[in-house]
Image 1 (cartoon, rainbow, N blue to C red):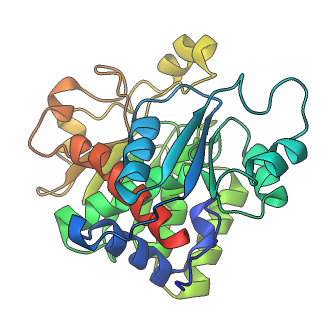
Image 2 (image 1 turned 180 degrees about the vertical axis):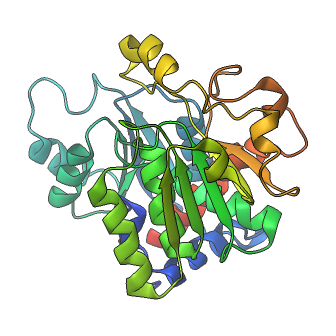
Amino acid sequence: MHALTGRDLLTLEELTPDELAAVLDEAELPAERWRRHDGRAAALIFMKPSLRTRVSFEVGCTQLGIHPVVLGPYDAFSREETVHDTVKVLERYVDVIVLRTFAQSHVEEVAEHASIPVVNALTDDYHPCQGLADLLTIRQHKGSLRGLKLAYLGDGANNMANTYLLAGALAGMEVAIGAPAGYQPAAPVLAQAEALAVRYGTDGRFQVTSDPAEAVAGADVVATDTWASMGQEEEHARRVGELAGYEVDPALMARADAAAIFIHCLPAHRGEEVAAEIIDSASSVVFDEAENRLHAQRGWLSLVL
């Protein structure tokens, strides 16, 4: 039995550096070495719209012999049924629950009641599956993770910024967040990342600055995300105005290391948080990154089951 068997994935904080490496290694196994889980089933619950998450989980499950049961917001956690009752029904049918939802407290409540593994497929606070895919992508293109600098620009208080801080702590990376006041990481998340780096002695380091040029200086990896996430559509115009100047464009990318790569979890708003010529450039690995959602999640499911 693997050390990760039966484990939840609510944030990356639950992993040790060795467990993180094990998941990334599992993700890169060739097809002939995939562990089969025939006869198992997974509930894939989407309270938010999804393209990459849904397709990658459905295909990953199928590749492992797991039957995916896709449920929408009118199928699960509906008709005023309690979370407890919904979970107690689901765990009689399936072997793992994958939940894409809004509040982090929702996925935590599901995990509290579930006797089977629960996977956070995105909440407003964290996106651990994307974090695994991004670390896998960086490792593939850079050879290793420890000692690299990742610069993240834009909304530094969103789920991807939070996830990069925890990922950097586990992987021993320097994470620089370039964001204006009001969009910088919450103090508890930054403290959480710093505590993780100390706990495991990874030499993970963290910087928060309002100067995007300072954040990206010498970076090995440059990352950004949409400026208005799902549920923030009405704030779009205000956010675009307040985040102006944090777009990843050629001038800003030129301040990174000459061999830097660009990542974005997608969907991207070209001409907003990233210039079209960057996302289409040779430094962009966004489609490798999207593909790696499949591999990273398949690796996680294989180990926890």
